[in-house]
Image 1: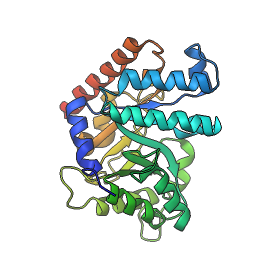
Image 2 (image 1 turned 135 degrees about the horizontal axis):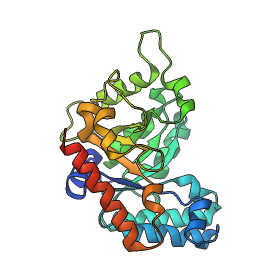
Image 3 (image 1 turned 90 degrees about the vertical axis):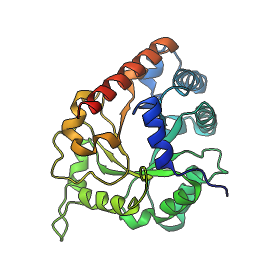
Image 4 (image 1 turned 45 degrees about the vertical axis):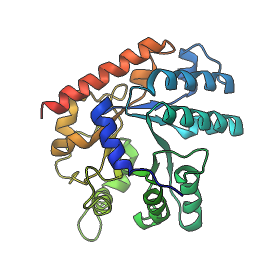
Amino acid sequence: MSSLEPFGARLRRAMDERGPLCVGIDPHASLLAEWGLNDDVAGLERFSRTVVEAMADRVAVLKPQSAFFERFGSRGVAVLEKSVEEARAAGALVVMDAKRGDIGSTMAAYAESFLHKDSPLFSDALTVSPYLGYGSLSPAVALARESGAGLFVLALTSNPEGGEVQHAIRADGRTVGATMLAHLAAENEGERPLGSFGAVVGATLGDLSSYDLSINGPLLAPGIGAQGATPADLPQVFGAAVRNVLPNVSRGVLRHGPDVVALRDAASRFADDIVSAVSAV
């Protein structure tokens, strides 16, 4: 299996050249309706193709939410496969938002679905859940390294329920979330210009100065736009790690569809605002 240049290096270059912006592809029923599309496979395909057409040649990262495709069964997954293929062909990196997490051979199978170069769903990176223990992610870590892909590990998520796990204090005095960040820092040690193993850290969480976000890897930051965070909030939330932040915007951009020009303009405004906020640090 021929490997790509490591994901971290490819992501750093894409963020520098295209701006640090990740746009979600989230075809949930309400957005399909806003676009005047039916909540069926034809509507799903039209939505996804439009987002890819509008974004894939200009944004750094596209992040399809697998669940919104899977709900249509095999035909929906076929649309997802095509969207991934076309997005990558146009130059965008693809982060598959599937949040997989399991143990042993099952985790290995999930990894092969999204991180094996011969898989029709091969993506540049995959979101994963470490809450069966960070070590349970070992098959995904190994295959990502082999294929030049990356992972984004749930560490400090913005949903209110996440705190009961992520802020729990271990016997060594560290929180579970801090432990996940420490594991990622170890994975990325010595990598240049950026490691390939990132954390998901919500942009809506406010001051995170009590956490060490310097993991030498990317920080995928959902919450910009409809969830209430703004690009101007990024320096306060992420501090010295802000240059490695990949803000994710979904509805804030997608609500401007189905007009391709309007989608592009919305993404461009977010990207410019993010660059301005980060450059001011």
